[in-house]
Length: 97
Image (tube, rainbow, N blue to C red):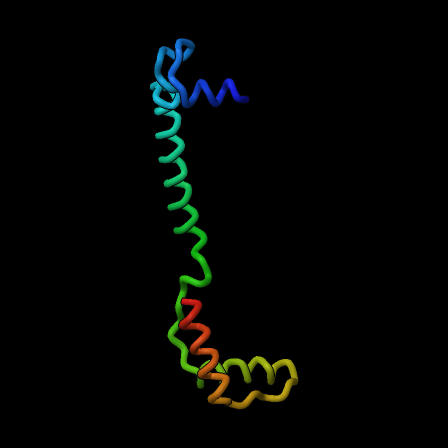
């Protein structure tokens, strides 16, 4: 392992007095690796968007109405609006964003 690292980083007779990282094959491999990584990253970003990167324009009142509709479907008591909790949630969302 140490000889391999010496070959990659230190110029000597066995690597034509040029570190292994500067050889054409190694540079080509690294360039192809970086291009592949960039394309893979772009593919993942476009096909699997992150949840935190999505924002929805829904008011607190609309959210409460939709939640209570689902709670009613499940025979649960409706929720009521609480301004302190609304403010705390807004602050947390702003902090996370």
